[in-house]
Length: 510
Ligand SMILES: *Cc1c(COP(=O)(O)O)cnc(C)c1O
Ligand code: SF4
Image (cartoon, protein in one colour):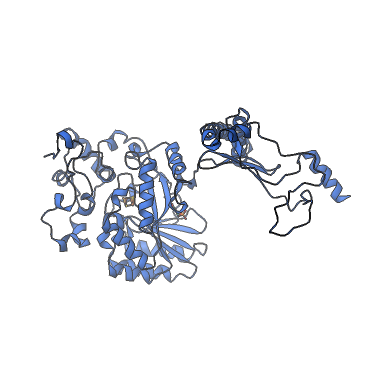
């Protein structure tokens, strides 16, 4: 039955969710017992149909989806889902949907090439000083977009295999950091995890241990005193949690995170950018603010990997950039995660940022920067280590005004931007009115530039290409007047053409 209040109160429908709705007869003792939660996970469609409506025409498709990748939803996580909203952001993360089938042929079993970089089963050694160790193949909930679907079919990882992973780390002195991930390590019995962490801790060159877990999100009851006391024995130990949506930030989750923090474990969040779940600035901002209140630092925002069956979750890269751009400067820097794309085939995590450095001329020591409001600023680099920068006046007391700096023998001044500063100051709130233009100019400039740069880059090396690209773009937008440069440095550089540098060099050596 759908409880909707018609008439004047329209839009204020009674939301059917929560423990009272789904599990009215379960006792407190059961509900707060993580073993009960784990045992009562929803794992079949018939089970699911007791709680959520499954359209009859979708059963077949969803069954097929389930044969590809299993389902697991804890009663706790289910209780956060709105039973009447088929687009509920938590439902989409864990309930098998026909959409997975639609794009079944697309995507990869192992999009990150983890097997390729695996010296022993379970270990991925991609970076010089740290390894990923996949301990188990079961999780409290199964996320439909999981990158490691392929590992989630088999039974428990045999102990000998775990010993082989530990042994690899022990005989590889370059490894100073291990990411113990999953499958979810916190699904292990406390004593078993303790034994594994003890073996890892005995490795002298292993400095830090990190655990990647979704348990505080999906099964927060598991974070009990016994577990926290055990974890605290193995410091320095860090935990990466995996919250994707503000609806997951419940009092239970907050309590779990608080317990871990009190056990001395720094918490960082790794979210995945998912279409229809969290792909807008407001949602990610609310998520990051909520995490901060729980003393969890937003660490990464991952582009969704092209894993099989997850095509409908993927967003364009521009979406991730837009989200970061909507956060940086607009809210606490601590609340801004690094947006990363894990390169297909095993290139590792590549950070992607909005372009704030629009132009960078290394020879001239000059950069054109864009701030979070789209205003442009010129920044000049120090030249103190060259013979060209000489203060005219001797140093004067700090109380006095900053002396103007002029260059010995200077015959060139910094190029003035062609847009006029007058227009800005004339209209009183100049910046505000000039920023839309600046934003467009910058955006066009940067994107044209980036494109050119990328193609030049193929020949010149990606680094140069990107740099030239950004430069060209910004320069052309500055020329057409849409991008006034604000914020000029007080320093003046001597012109630095090749001929001038050669002449100076000659003077120095003669
Ligand atoms: C993500 C990842 C790590 C850890 O990367 P950080 O950027 O240090 O958090 C290590 N190894 C592999 C294979 C990974 O995918
Ligand atoms: S918790 Fe992590 S490893 Fe487990 S299914 Fe979700 S994304 Fe995959």
